[in-house]
Length: 305
Image 1 (cartoon, rainbow, N blue to C red):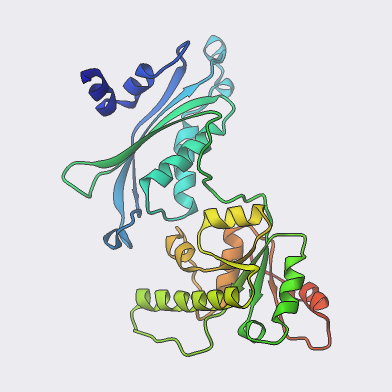
Image 2: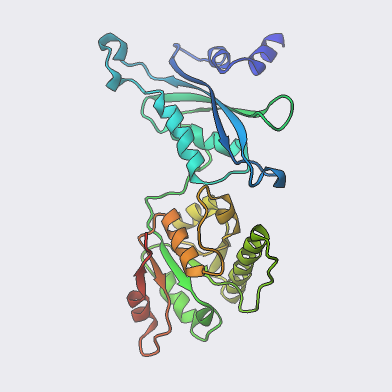
């Protein structure tokens, strides 16, 4: 039991040695890598940064790098620090567990990476530390981390005139049959949205007003599914789901939040398109003399990416 406790609370190197199977593997370590970031599920952790410490031990397949002193044959320490930086740049996260999973997934994508130990700790929440340890191996199913940026989704901006118009079903027929997975973005509700003169509160109220319209659309047509996070959107794009963007979580969790707010929904949609590496935003416009198919093709406009 004492050995188990020592391993549980010891260094990641000790865990790697104690849990090794078969021939020992080479290990690459990054210790006490500290970043000052915004993360956490509590309201007190929003709009403020805290120190987060990363320790990573990566077990790698053998190479002949030492024999030839060849840096090109070595899995660089940068692979670890770059994986951390990359995942921190994607979006604001609530859970250390999610961040650890994504970092492990990114590191294990390297051909020589075999097993990785990730420890992440919050240094400022209590007098001690709060943290998470995970170990992941090549070939083990892992939580999908980042969005599948290889997919070029069809981002459709649908104004209220279409959402509440008589041709809504026709438009949805056209969007659904497009050869790319579609994400529909909306305006705020037609009714006047209350304001508070407090920027954070007004932003949340405006985003929730857009989400009200998202649920209106979902109620009008069962093909439309409201989605509010990157993982869900990733799955939806892979599976051809007709998605309606509920923007609050992605906007508030973004590392680089949009300059445009809910009062400029098209610009907000363009920011969203850029986040998902979409090539354009398709704006549905009321061109009465054209069929819905013609309108969709003609209304495609650059997203100013």
